[in-house]
Image (cartoon, rainbow, N blue to C red; front, side, top):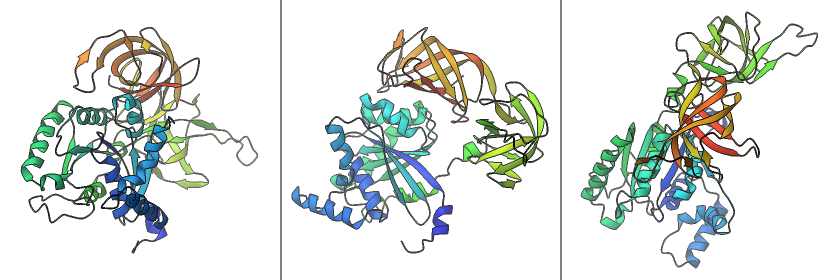
Length: 424
């Protein structure tokens, strides 16, 4: 692309977003359109798509064929969690998490959306808001995705009727209040012909918003994490024990949120020891401060008994500490969860054991109804309460997606059994 330089490209911000839509809503076509219009397709790929489109008797290039490889693998019975697509504009880099949306793939969608900054919810203008629309939107909101972009697709099939678009917009806004969605964007599009995807369409003179790509370029990335309380889960204690670094001790990890600077007074949790930061380094370079999501090593003025799983925090905004937590969990195991079951719990850099105290309620993700049951099955989402053998240092998931999330692991098989978001 014109105007690109390697240095500028490397320094561009990256947005992760997920896509969700019902069958035949045009999700594959939209992804293909984004790749095509941003010139992110190799010429040989495009030629193959053109040839395949002609063979299938299509009147236009079938951009959905760019993602048909994933569908073919599913039809062959191969298990696939998430497919990732990459593209860029002169202003930003993007990663698309292309996730399946059926109820039996709820766990797959949770996996793909867990690191996303935005979610595209595709709606067929002729079908309107469906159960799958509600399910996808609820899961996205549950996972803390703050920006939902509702793309009302196939507007060409209703002659770009403003009333059809406004009806869906009104219905979705009413539903969004139930799931406490934060930032909503609505775009009338035709993924097949590219209207309002990368370029503004002459067919929608009544639409005064930006194109889909313009909205994606302007969404802030991880600001709420960078600006929240400073958290540094310790992953490794560095003790070289060499002549050059005889008394050196530092603590390595990835900053989960906030900023740390030399001279800051910090507290080590759960012990509660207080000290000051002596130095911060990235590999062999000393720096004066570091912010999320940088991986660094930090040395302190005082030596304490600090180990993997402890958390370094600043004094102004301390996290929560408890051995009893409540969380929303997406169950991923074929073996049902029952009250009294024990699991390995992984949270930030800490690993401990946990027991299921209660299953508070199970959510019907199609209509958001809650019901009581004594077990949890694969692909279901529920509120549960756990008790751990060691104290957890954590934040609520809505405030920090890194320190507020947990993974439950089967003790016998070590498979990932569930992914949880701490709510209390």
